Length: 134
Image (cartoon, rainbow, N blue to C red; front, side, top):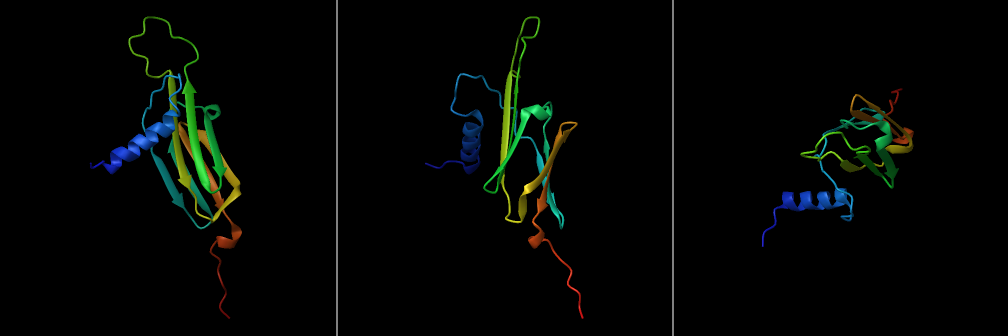
C-alpha cells in the first residue's frame, strides 16, 4: 500500500501539534510562514505569529534544536449566540535543527506587529576572519 509522503508528514506534525488528544478542544490554524537567513555573524529567523502576544510564545533552544510554540486560549465567553467557535484554542509549533556554528548562549528574540524575530549569534571561532598577506 502506497502512502503519500506529504500526507504522512502532515499527519505526524498534526499529531505532534495536538499532543495526546486530551480534552482540550483544538483548532490548527495552519503552519505560519518562517524565513531563515544568515550573514557572517548571525542567523536570523522571522516567523509570522498573527494575533499572539509575547506571553503566548515560548522559545526554547536545547541540544541544537530551536523550538517555537505559540498557544492562545479563549478566556471569556463572547456575548451573543455562537454559530461557529474555532478560535477558542490555537496552538502552533515549529522546530529547527541549528548548525554547530550557533552560540546557544547568545540569542535575542522580539515580537512586533505579529512577526517574531530571533537573532542567533555565531560562535566567534566559526566566523570568517580576514588573514593579512605579508
